[in-house]
Structures are given as C-alpha cells and as structure tokens.
Length: 152
Image: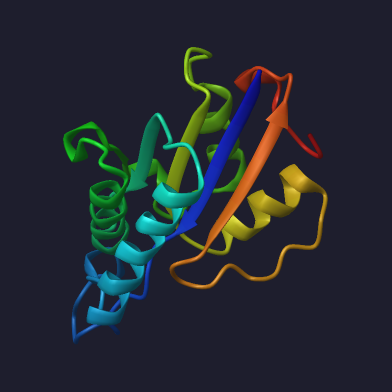
C-alpha cells in the first residue's frame, strides 16, 4: 500500500510589525490567494490527504484553513501542533512515523528550513529551497508510517 506525504510551506506572510512576535505574522493577500490556489491544485490532481497537521503559527494556520477549504476537508479536523513551529527534522520524522497506519496520506503545513531539510532527508535528493506556498509530494511504496526514514 502506498503512503503519501504532502509537505507544504505556509504561504507568503506579512513582514513583522514593530513588537510583533514571528509566530503571530498573518498571511498577505497574495499568500491567501496562493494558499487557495495550492489547495485547488491538490484537489484537482491528487487524492485528498486523510489527515492535516499544521504549525500553530498564524500564517501556517491560515494556510491550512485555506488549503482545507479547497480540499473540502473539515477544517475542525486540522491537528494544530506547537511542536511544528521551529520543528527539527527529528520532530517532523516523529510526526510522520507516529501516523496511524489506517491513514494512507497526510499533509503537513509548517516552516523552512526544516521542511526543505526533511524533503532532502526522505528523498536523498537535492531539493531546492521550498518557497512560501510551495508543496513537495513524497510517495512511499509498501511501507508503514513507522518504516519511513532517510532515503525511503
């Protein structure tokens, strides 16, 4: 059975305002548009992810809601995690490895540079820096979630 991981970098965020925490930066108007377009693209070209995880950063939450809307995914089912903000590759791998095997696909919305590093780690390929609003789709044939790892 195939497992699919959609790695999504949040869409374009506003520059921080004076005294604003990084975690609180919202999407720009262009970021909102791009998140919706990304969700529509995924809906039209791939089977919908069965579970969505997102960082608790405002820009990641907003991206997840806009993507989910286009995927016709119940937004209340988005799993928000503080651990995904400034997550390490190890943290992201733990998330993937802990997905219940009843799910065949997952979507993770978080931040760089960890997202790009994770894509490189899993694929053993040179992955270009993931830009805001980009997605990397990785497929794993014949593996359980707990078996996914470096180069698989």
